[in-house]
Length: 186
Image 1 (spheres, rainbow, N blue to C red):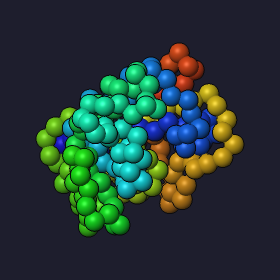
Image 2: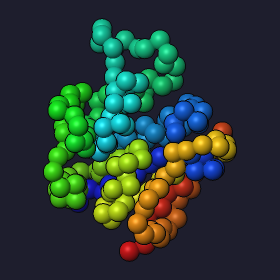
Image 3: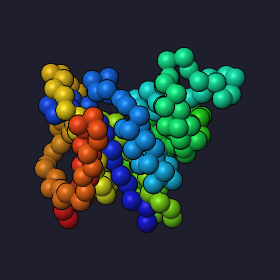
Image 4: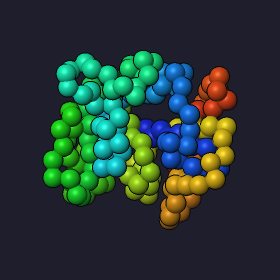
């Protein structure tokens, strides 16, 4: 059974807007390591469209967007190559090595988890809330940045009941960010 891992960047005051946190080479390397521990990404429409706009290579193949730093290329290549499952009620089709997930979310994700492999990785805000509500996330990683953003969105707003977590590891970065990994207490 493949585990479903959730990873997100968050500020000390709980903001998970990716534009509120500085990206650096070390954090991108860590993200590549996370991606390499998964067979596929499981994302919602908003995260899929955001990743596609930022990391899908433009034509001609292999070209790098002018706004992308050289040290972001390994992350972009890894995202580009990754199998993607996209949960959406509004998209009619996806490409970019992606497949739409429709119907009963719990059933569809359980089916994906039953497949053999290293795991699934999810991110974003809305889909992970639904997955947490269903008890489907096997590991949570919060990369906490030493910044106060003063605005949202925040994680798990509207969660119907608390989820107790057990710290399983921590990793400090030169930027002062800390990756905290947790497993649900079952």
